[in-house]
Image 1 (cartoon, rainbow, N blue to C red):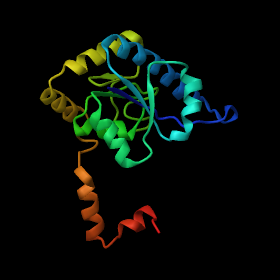
Image 2 (cartoon, rainbow, N blue to C red):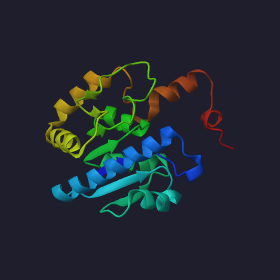
Image 3 (cartoon, rainbow, N blue to C red):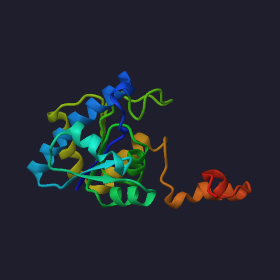
Length: 193
């Protein structure tokens, strides 16, 4: 299946900012185009929401379509979704970046800069797996190329382009090692009781 990671939260109409309006409008265009692509190419299409209780909001925003909403309500569920997908599409998402560096095939259509606005590293407006421009034709072209790309070539392309931003650290072993070396308990970080 193809997975779209929504970066938006449900908001009331009076809470809309210009940035949020652009984010939602961008997501609506992408979801509608992805829906057509998946139908034509015979892929299942899933939309990952930040919270499961927001499904009604997004059904109203996106309108009817041939997709399934899933909630990435836990870290395990999020990783399960990305691990099982053939391709991931997102606008702005740290989970999308994690999937990329893990070697998953991804495409980003940010409504601002890639990987995020005001990031210290500046990227071109288009790259091998991102485009600040969007149209059905651009989406179709990128997805066809990415899906046909051999896995080893894909991983090299990702590493060559964003390898300096983030590295794959299975199970956050470096993070937990640093905590242990500094005598910091995990529950102090996550504020567990």
